[in-house]
Amino acid sequence: MKTDIMRKNETEVAVIYSDEPLITDIQSALDLAMTVKHETGCTNIALNKDAVTDGFFILSTCLAGEILQKFVNYGIRFAIYGDFSKYTDGWLF
Image 1 (cartoon, rainbow, N blue to C red):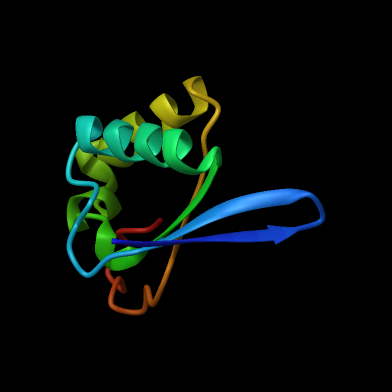
Image 2 (cartoon, helix red, strand yellow):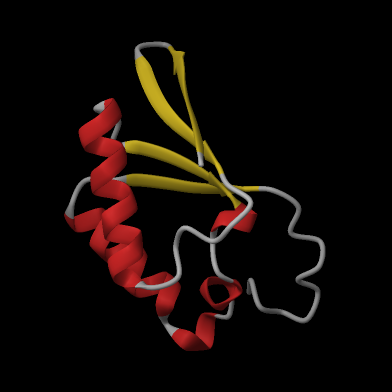
């Protein structure tokens, strides 16, 4: 896991890159968010797509909704960046 802090207009974002899934379930998502918040002070987190399990993008699993609700409750702003072109069968809709 590599973490860079980007600053622009008085906003800090922890940009995280990992080749392995860091978020596989709700607990791993909370652990990651709290670790980043503790180590960097950032509540804005951007994570590459490969660091998130594919189940997150299958909306019928409800994993995305549950994780995002926890992040809202803890004041974490979250974004995923990367190439989403392989998801052509409607998973993201």
